[in-house]
Each structure stands twice: as C-alpha cells, then as structure tokens.
Amino acid sequence: MKFVTLASSLLLAGSSMAAPGSAMRKARAAQRSSRKSLPPQRLEAALLKLNNITNVEYDSNWAGSVITTTGVKEVTGTFTVPTPSSEGSGSAWVGIDGDSCQTAILQTGIDWTNSGGDITYDAWYEWYPDYAYDFSSSDISLSAGDSITVTVKATSETGGTAVIENTTTGETVKHTFSGEGSEGDLCEYDAEWIIEDFESGDSLVSFADFGTVEFTGATATTSSGTVEAGDGSILDIEQSSEILTKCSASGTTMTCKYV
Image 1 (cartoon, rainbow, N blue to C red):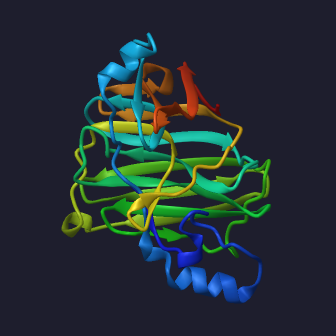
Image 2: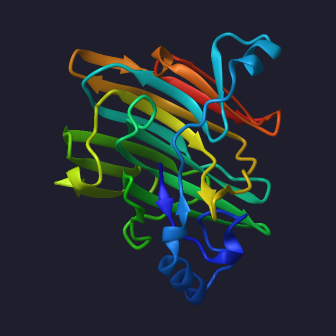
C-alpha cells in the first residue's frame, strides 16, 4: 500500500505533478502525504461466475500476481516504464505482504501520471502503513522505455531493503529499513508483482491506460526455495462493473494489459 501526497488539483491525476517547473515540484513534494494505496479489495465471487472465469480474482485496485506461502525473503522483477495514453495515474511495484498479511508491506516501485498530455514518473519505497517516500530524481531518472528492476528484501520482520535499478541509465537507488515494528511487522507470507490504482482524497484516482506492463525475471526467494510469478494467483482490476486489466503469468513472466 503506497502512501504519498498530492496537491488538491491532482486528486484525479495521481501522484505526479500536473505541469513542469520547480514550483510545482516543490508544492507536490510538500503535500505527498494525502495520497495512499489500499489493501487489495476483493470483489464478489459472483462476478467471476458471471464472466465464466475460474482462474482470476477481481479487485478494485490491484492487478497482477500474488503468491501466498511462508518465509518470503525477497521479491524481484524487471519491467519497461510505460507511456500512459489517457489521463490518470497508476503504479507498478513488487512487495512482500499486504494480501493475506496486512499488518505491513515492504514495497518499492514507480508511479506514472498523464495530466493533459504531460507525463511524469516517480520512484518510491514504502513500509506500510507509513507513507511512501520518493527517491530523489537527481539519483534516479525515469523515462518511457527505460528498463527498471525493482527488488525488496526482508532482513527481519521489522527491517529490509528496497532497491530500484534503471538498467537503461545505469542508475541505482536503495533504501534500508530498520526498527519498523512501530509501523507493523511483516509476516513474510505474500510475494507480489502488482499494477495498482491508488487512492487520493478517500477515493481512487483516475486509472490511466498504461498499455502493457510485463514483469520478467519475476521471482521470489522463500525459506524453502524460489517461486515464480507464474505460481501465483492472478488479480485483475474491476471498477463499476467494468474490467480494466487482463493479467496473466507463466514461469518468471507476468503481464498486465489495460483493456
């Protein structure tokens, strides 16, 4: 669950600024705490039956692959930064916990926003339920088409690391968490590769058409060995009776398409 803040004018545009310029960047950075992610919000099984689908669960804000097991220590994956073609926002991230275990989530990823054709990106890390924090744009840049590898590692129930590598530019950023027990302990039950529609101002932001995001090298290390995104349960986003994504996973590849 990602927490950030936005200026009030961005409630429907997502987590990136609406226009270029240092003033907008400063205003946005000062107000990131009003933006947040939600735990997955499972929808009724009747919807699955209605659509004659048995291998997918529908959710209002998460799409992707989730593996529930024990002893999840590390989750990683690589994807290409998308170009959202409609106004709105979205996120791509990897995480530990948040599905079957909601006391904490260790996660890292990127946001994208299309506001009037101005497309912006953010790289962030989070230990839910604390807010998410941006990596400095001077340390890592993001552009459409860049190859991004995201990795989270739990070193304990209250500590770990979040790493984002832009393999196109050669830039890497890392954050180390420690003593996060006051926020919440990890259970190390869930490994996740997720496309998310997040919340701002107590409602979901407009979910941008992100095209296709494909995670490759999507694996998780557990206390009993390595698992792959293809071993997980598939989630798709459904809002107001409209299905917005179509995700699938096989082996170490997980693909989500906006539909």
